[in-house]
Amino acid sequence: MKYDFDKIIDRKNTGSLKWDVTDRELPMWVADMDFCTAPAVTDAISARASHGVFGYTVLTDDWYEAYRSWWSSRHHFEIDKDWLLFCTGTIPAISSIIRKMTAVAEKVVVMTPVYNIFFNSILNNGRNVLENRLRLRDGVYEIDFEDLEEKLSDPQTTLLLLCNPQNPVGKIWDEETLERIGELCAEHHVPVLSDEIHCDLVKPGREYVPFASVSEKCRMNSITCVSPTKAFNIAGIQTSAVIVPDETIRHKVNRGLNTDEAAEPNVFASIAPAAAYMHGGEWLDELNAYLWENRKTAEEYIDREIEHVTAIRAEATYLLWIDCREITEDSEELWRFLREQTGLYVCDGKEYHNGDGFLRMNLACPRERLMDGLERLKDGIRAYKTRSGS
Image 1: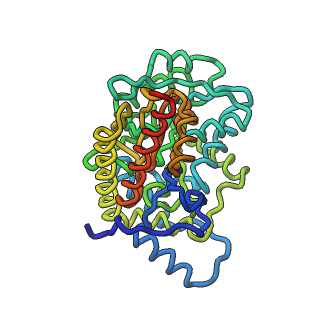
Image 2: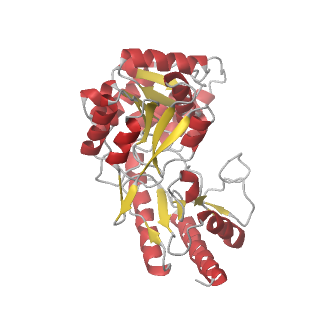
Image 3: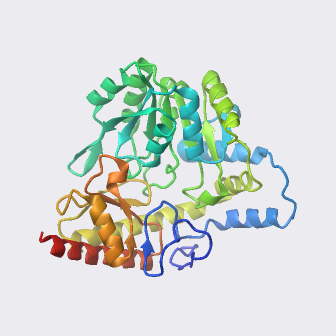
């Protein structure tokens, strides 16, 4: 490999949310990576920083062209420049769009288990959550379309919040599935807000399908949140884009983002995505190859070393969804026990709804650190089973 993903980087005392832990703890929870970003991104930021003047900033043409060319070449989706809106982050965008596109007490459909902050964006704004619970069959998550249609047909349902690929289960929704979702949402006049922030973190040889690319119905009834922050590990720069093909919907989203003061870029917010998408492709390909070796290592280790625990096979993200239900349905207790006894800090599956008895583990770290985490997981599970007599 040209790039060194085995290098251990000390992130303590850098203001890192992930690494704000005690010395004995190993954080494998929040979804950021323990790798340096692509050199092209660092070089672009350093060059801009050396200028020394950091006044109010506007988006450059490079920002627009970077998104358009990346989605065209990587994801076979042509984006008009006018469709692109800037936002300081995907969650600020989602919260703003919920406020603008729905009314207080109306309902937003989510497919669970799903990223826990979705619930904050809905509930904190006075809207109600409707859960379309995914079904796990033979290790594969599927959509319950009968239940989905019932919930979309509710007159109080005014938005579907889609996660594509699905976090935490790592599912890439195929074109047929997305088209069926789009047909149902169009039939019931429910816009689709699709969070596609994990789209570039996929198994080598697999491709994600942008929801808006599937059909005219999907495109004109869609709002898509995208960003290089997950794939290039630059979440702290606070930069993202919202793709809105329909002019009327785009006007509403744009007014919401501006009213919420979430549409002003910082000095690096245009430069970093442009550098990532224009010059970071080779780095990302090597990253994905490394991540998938990490996933394979973790899956095989759990299969071999940890009885009564199953790693759910995935196609996207660097997050491992771990089924511990043969040991306990109380994943909150297990999560706390692992952290207290071994220092391993993962995520409680209960947070994601429809995830009781599961854990979420971040695999985006050097392999040496991954093995440390897996050994702590094994030791902690063994100790938990001994304590509970299982």
